[in-house]
Amino acid sequence: MNATLSRRLLLACALPAAAKAKSAPLVMVNTVYPPFVNAPGDPAGEGLDVEIAREALRRAGHEMTLTLRPWKRVLLELETGQADFTTTISRRDDRSRYLAWSPAYRNGADYCFFARPGAPFTLAQLDELQGRRLGVVSGFHYPPPLLQVPRLQLVPGRDVTMLVKMLLAERSDYMVATALAGRWELKQLGLSEQVREQPYRYHSDSPNYLAFARARPKAMAALAGVSAALTQMRADGTLRRIEQRYGA
Image (cartoon, rainbow, N blue to C red):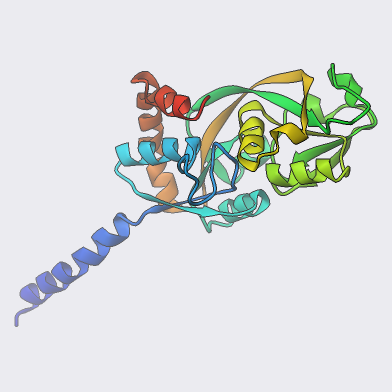
């Protein structure tokens, strides 16, 4: 066998492996945050933001797998290059060190507050949080004005479900969640009658993004195509149709 033929055979054998590596699914890492990211087997589907991500990646020619972690672990795996991207994340300067951002796919959110039905206080304005204990999800980005109330004590929990449990156990006075997520979680848990939504609501214009790990070359290579797909999905109404299926 001459040298030229040998090189051609080696190249032919290598091509399937290279093609397979190129088409390997991107790893999305996230935390359970209904209805944006639902628990496995949820009859409502994978979740609003998971569906958005899958469609954007499909249009860009990629597949994805989903791994669920606590939120702090999500950020760690992105920073250390153990996963490719996440969704439902707010843009911050400290995160930009290890994340690259898609265009915003959702702008703004309302934040609702909940208390126990028998609690002897009602939240009608933000400054009434002074001296109170507020349940928050660990690692979640909240609008700064919510966290800068004097003498406010933050009580972190793993997720919205844990916030509800802490509230009912009187370990916190209030819990806060985005309006859609909080109401969805309470309904799914059958706890809507066990907590009382407060009159006060805070509106934030902070957008949500897909964020890609700078430490992952294949994630960075996918960013431009996924970003273009998101822009297209907004223009053709796909984003809104997915949102409406989840009551947004």
